[in-house]
Structures are given as structure tokens and as C-alpha cells.
Length: 236
Image (cartoon, rainbow, N blue to C red; front, side, top):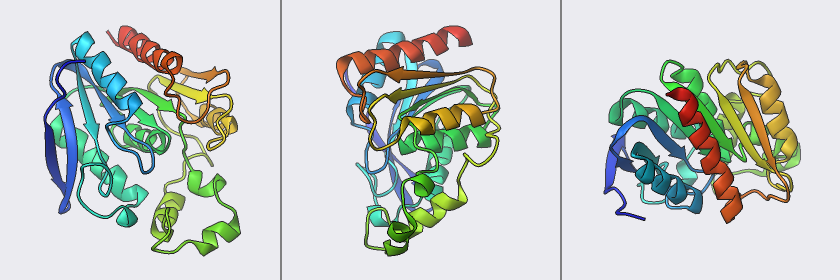
């Protein structure tokens, strides 16, 4: 792998958001990490290396309170992290985007596609977890959340307000859902529900046999990169 882009920071509402931007030809790939994850994970680095080899632009970010960004993780909420992701694409890059989200990042990716439909040309959700504040908690568990737990009550409440799976998801670009057959954190039924609710007619679900939630094994990374390469070919 070549040199990583410099670590820089963007101010969003007084919060210092760390990012790495690889400048090159468009469309720009943007990677959105999962809950309590950051932009230096296996999938993010593999995608950055792919972008470098392919001569493509790529943006990676850390939400406030995670990775190299400022702030406390306990203050993070879904709406805040959507705001930070939106500010990053609006202020740092121009032109079309291929938005890739891992786990909770897949939920945020769907919201970016809804908020910037004219810019998001394709979307990839890796073990996407839309609405996990709804299906991931019992009523008792949700009631026990406080400002000191992880996730916090504030995060849970913001997630409940940003749920998507109860109705049509008005995203029309090509969408690729990549999910592990044995994902114990995000049941594969969530991927099927997402596929059914998306308005786009170009939605494919790739279910990886034996795959867990992380999807970071070499053959799983290869599947992700092949998927992104296929979307790039269709966007040319």
C-alpha cells in the first residue's frame, strides 16, 4: 500500500471531525464506519488501497467521539453523525459519490442518499444495520439506557426518529447489500427488509456463506472490492 492521505480535521458545529481525503478523478468513494468503529479498520484501508490502485478519489471520516476525531463518544447520536457525514461531502468534495457504509454506517449511507440524491450515484451497505435501535433492543433494554451506557439513551432516541424500514426508502440509485449468512449482530432478515423497502429497481443482495458481522476475511474483502468495481463500471 502507498502513502495514506494526510490526517486533517473539519469543524462541524464546533466538533473536530478527522478525515483522510485521497484526491483523484471522480466519482469519489466515501467510507462510513460502523458504531464505535473508525476509518482505520480493515475494510476502510482495503477500500483506500483499491482507490489508490484505481486512480480514484476517496474520503474516510471518523465521527465525533471516535477514532481521531474530538469529543466524547457518549455524546454521539445518529443525527449528529449524519450531520457530520453530510458536512464532509458538502464541504470537502464535488461531483458524484459512491457511498459505502459498514453496519451503522450503512444506515447513515441511506440517509445521505435521501438527503443528496443528485450526488449519490451508488450505495453499498456492508452488514448494513438500519433501524438497529428498533430491532436490536427489547423494551426493557431500551428503558435501562442512560447517558453513561453504550449506546446512550440519546443515541437510541435519535435512532428511533431516523428509522427507515417501516416504509418505502426513496432511494433510486443502484444499491448493493453485502451480508454475512451467520451475522449474529445484524440478522440477514434486516438486509432482506432493506432490499424490499428500497424504491430503486437496481438492488442486489450478496449473502456470503459462513460470513459473520465483520466481513473482513480476505475472500470477504475481495467480494466487497468486486462489488465496488462493478458499480464503477456501470457508472462510466
